[in-house]
Every structure is written in C-alpha cells, then in structure tokens.
Image (cartoon, rainbow, N blue to C red; front, side, top):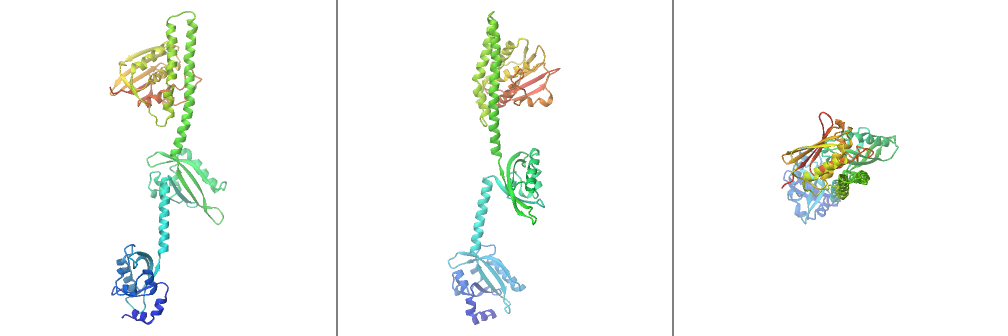
Length: 479
C-alpha cells in the first residue's frame, strides 16, 4: 500500500468523520485508493464500488471537465505540487449526474497521490439554470417587445446594452462602444432635444430621462424610439455616475398615429374641396340661368354641363374617401376609355371659360387605360388649374396625347406665368395653394393621389417660350 493508504487505514475513523466528500487518487496507477462515508452518501455508492477503479468511474460527461480532462489536471497537480479547483459532474449510484466542485491537493510524502475534496454543487447549478432560464425569458421579451436595455457611464460615456438595441437598427452590437455611436445616428431634427433631455437629468431638473426620437438604421431609413432612463449609481458627491434605461421601438405606433392624423386632415380638406367645387359650378349654373331668362339656346347646354359635373363630382366622393382613409387601400381599377374621361372635360372647360382656347393635338385618345371613373376628375382639375392660374386675359391650353410602350402620356401646356423649379414637386402637396384663390387649391393634390393610385405618374415641366406643362402618364389596360 502507499503511504496515503497506510494513513487512511491508521486514521480511518477520522477520515470518515469529515463532513465533505474525500477521495484519495493515485495518479500513477490512475486508481481511486480511498473514499470516505460523506463521499459515498453524496455519490450513492458503496466504498467497494469505487475503490480500485479509475477516475472515469466517478465522473460523467455532463461537464466540460470530463474524466480525461480531470485526470490530466490531477497529474499536473502532483508534478507541480500545486492545488487546483475545478467544476465537474459526479456519476451517482443511480446513474444520474450531480454537479460538484472539486479541490485537488497533493498529499505530502505521497508523490503520486492527490486528495480530492468534493463539494455538492447542486444548489449553485440550480441557481445557474434559473438564471439562464430568466435570461432566456428576458431575451425573448426584448425581441418580442422590440426593446433593449442600455447603460451609460456618465464620466466616460461608455455604454453597454442588450444586443437587441443594436439589432433593431440592423447593426451588430460590436459597432457600439460609446454613447456617441448612437447619437451620431439621430435625426438632425431630434438631436438637440435628446441631448437637452439628458442634460436636464445631469442638472437634476428631473429624475427621469425620457425622449422620443428618430434614429437612422443600417439601411439608411429612420425608425422611432422611446427612451426612458434614470441614474442607478451615484458618485460620492451625489452626482449621477451610471444611467440605466430601456429603448423601445415605437415606429409602428408612430406610423399609425401619423396615418390617422393625415386621414383626419385629408377628410377635412376633401370636405372643403367638394364644397368649393360645387360652389364654383353652381355659380356658373346661376349665371347661365340669369341669361336663360332672356334667351334660350346654347346656354341651356352649358347649364346641363355644369350640373352634370356637379353630380358626377358628388357621386365620386366615396371613391376619393376610400383613397385617403383606408390604410394601404387600393382602388378597384378597370379599363377606362381615355377619350371618355378627357374630351368631355375639355368641352366643359371651353364652355365654362369662354375666353379660353384649348387645342387638342397628338395621337388619338381611342385607347383604354387602367383607372376608374374618377379619371375625368384628374383631367378636370388639371384643366381648371391651368385656366384659373393663368395671368393672361385669354388663356391658351394645348392638350397633347402620345402613345408609348405600355403607357399613354397626356400633357396639358399653358401660357401662364410658369412654375419655379423649387415648387414643381410641392405644388402637388395639399394646401400649397390657398382656397382664397380662384381655384380649389387642392386640384393638383387630388390629381396626384388618383394618378398614383392608378399606378401612373404626374409631374411638371417648363413650357417654351412661357408657361408650364403638366404631364400625366397612365398604364394601358390589358385588352
């Protein structure tokens, strides 16, 4: 027997009285030479079951420190005469694995023998499992809730955060170390507000940092976030040392809020538009009725034309409301004969404005396009706009039709004052022209809405030598 085994035999009662598991292991023979009662209880084995076996009998594979790794640790322990502590798993008598912490210490006077003190680590393992489960649950909550926690050191500006905070923006977490890595991405219009909210926290004007802002994503778009934070650590002087908070992606809510706000505004504008157009047409009706009291003839046709336009306009209100109130709404498109939508509007404007000359040129309008019955309103608005904003006593309009591959382009050129380059796009926005003007002020806006819904395009170019040209491109209908 080895000197260690002799010691165990001589002091067996003392060896067994120790309350933690003890194992004597001979590294030269790769053999367990002694175990105490506490170890047998811990491992649910009998002494004879393990004494004389190798280390693999005791250890399982449920840990990074398996039997082969542990045997290597123990040999190094005897070679270096240094203690080592490691985690591993103990195979019990019922073939389950119990997590343990092992302290290995060379035995004095026994060159190849190591004394292993084995501590039950089941509680710590359970705590670690609970922590891992909690961390997993928190991770899932972060991803599902589109949010991420963050923490900033006030003095250094260094930040730590949940990976989801960066990934919500399309970045890898390693791209952010300092708070400026985030603030450099803030929308220019939101940057100063965000900075001032944090400065107010430093000045102790508030105990809570809270701000909504837009921040640029990896693909160049902006998303809305709501940040809430407060100091969680302080300096000896009582100043904020660490600020902890959470960032929540509120883009969907902001987009819904904006859509609802625009719908309310557009419905109000639509109401004003319809009222204004009806008033204009009925003014014309009343004018010609006065003349009809004295004579009949062509004036009666003009009254009928204006009244018909009014009826068609009010009948189509429902379609326009659907365009501007339904999220992602798409009009039900159908083949519409271009001539039936364009030419009656040309005749109506000629009759309504006797001093206006309209010339129709280019290719024929005998073609079907993808639209709906509101297409006539597009041309009516464009023609009215051209006449009403012309500063000449005798407005001259040229309506040109040109066929292209798969589309038809209709242009309306005038001899008016023209449109500056910086307004060529904004004139299609609602409210660009006041309702106090002769026109509705919303004709181009509604025209843009409808043409876009048709899958077409509308824009403005300069006319030569003077005036402007409004161009509409519509897709041909499949026939």
